[in-house]
Length: 135
Image 1 (cartoon, one colour):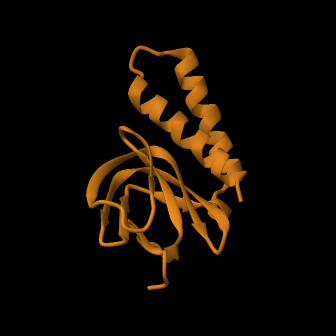
Image 2 (image 1 turned 180 degrees about the vertical axis):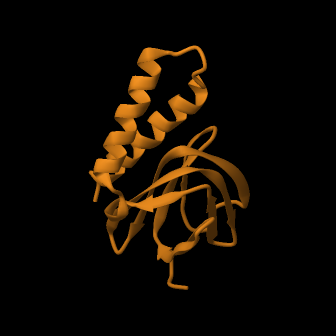
């Protein structure tokens, strides 16, 4: 592995999304955002809905992540995500439609509405839209 780089592997239920050597990354850990550099202390954390930012070849890259876990150990970060999408792979029209649907559900507040599920759908859609605009 190149000097001052860490290995970043992102795995989803669909398979390996990416495996890259990166200079640094930022994760949406459940207890708050956390940065990882080479020689980081070993840890395991749950992930929230959010944005993974990583630096490769002096350029920032972004992914939308929707929950999961991350393990940091021996200059390797493994993210086991419920789902993850690179910024260029996001269907913006679909994300905007999902945001609109979630906002409408929350606005109408029907008696059988699963509020938590609707709020999570809204958060996922907003993160996907934000990530699609980053690059």
